[in-house]
Length: 21
Image 1 (spheres, helix red, strand yellow):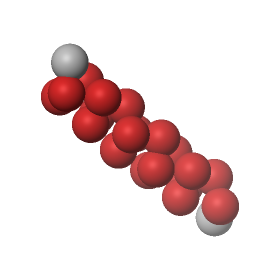
Image 2: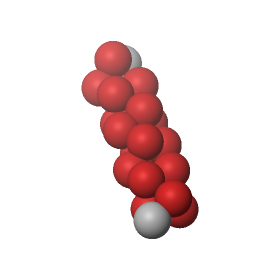
Image 3: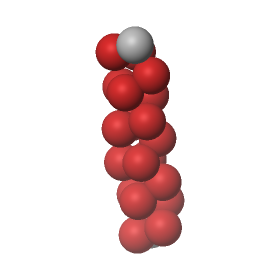
Image 4: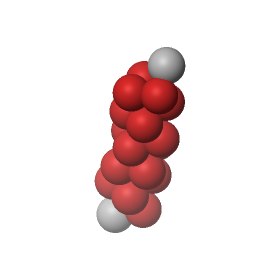
């Protein structure tokens, strides 16, 4: 499912942003 890939990518970006803060 494309939706799953999108969620995984968005989650990774969000997680990296949170860690970077």
